[in-house]
Image (cartoon, rainbow, N blue to C red; front, side, top):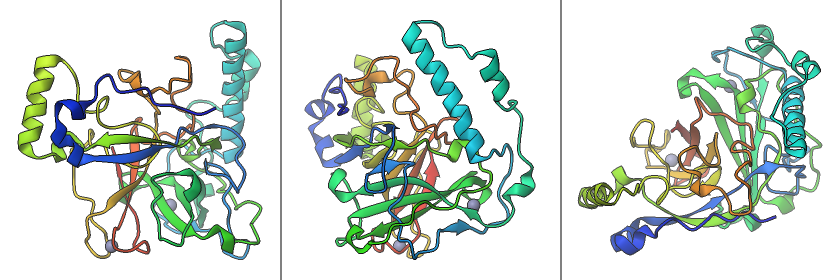
Length: 326
Ligand SMILES: [Zn+2]
Ligand SMILES: [Zn+2]
C-alpha cells in the first residue's frame, strides 16, 4: 500500500512566491513494521553487507549508561505490546495487557548490569536505502546504496545521542552477502529500530522560518498573526523519517553544522524522527491510514521525542557525518 501525504491546508508559495527560491524536495520514507530483506530499502532491516568486510563497532568507553536491555528482551516486549494492540483493534475493546503479559515485561526501572556494555559495541542497522527507491537519494555518482548504522548507546560528546556511521556502496559489487551482523549484548531500547519496510514519497518543503531572509520572515510572521495559520511545520516542514529536505530547528534554534574535517557547511541527509506525525499537527498522516495508526512505527525515540538529523559534507562523502537533535 502506498502512502500519500495529504495536500497542505493551503499552498504557502501562492501567498509568498519568493518562497519558491527556498523550496526543496524531501523523500518521506513512511516506515512501517514488516519483513524487509537485504535486497530491500528499509528502516532497521538487514543490510546488504559484504561477507568479507568486518562489522563496524564502537570502541568508546565513555558511553552514558542508564537503562540497558538485551535486544531480544526489547523485541519480546514489543511483541507483547503489538499483540495487545492487535487484540484491541480486533475486539474494539480498550487496549489492555493481560496479567501474563504484564508479568512477562521487565520492571520499568530494570537494567541489565552496565558491565555488559563494556568492550566494542557492534553498531545496529538504522536504514538501508537503494537509489532506485528514493528520489532524493544523496551519494557518490557510482553508488546506488546508502547504509546508515549507529552505536545504540548514549554518547555524551554528541548530546547524549547515538553515534552515526554511513556507508555508500555499489550493490553490484556485493556478490557475497553477510547473513546478519553481530548484535550488541545490551543497548538503549530507544535506539533499536523495529524492522520496517518503507514507502518512499517525494514532497516539497520550505526552509525553516529563521533561516529565510529577515524581511520575508517578518512578512510571514505578520501574515500568521492576521490569519491564524502557522508556517512552521504544517505548511513548510514534514515530520518523520525522511531523506533530504530541511531540518526543523525548533529545539535549539538554527546553528551551523560545519564539517569537522574541512569546515564546509553540511547538508541534511537523513532525519530519524520519534514521530511520523504529531499531536497538534496530524496533517501529515497519510490519507491511506486511519486516525488510529501508530505515530511511532519504528519504535525509535530520540531524546524526549525529538528527531536526529544526520548531515553530510558537500565536499567529500569520506568526511564524517554530523548530527543534531531537534
Ligand atoms: Zn558508542
Ligand atoms: Zn568536509
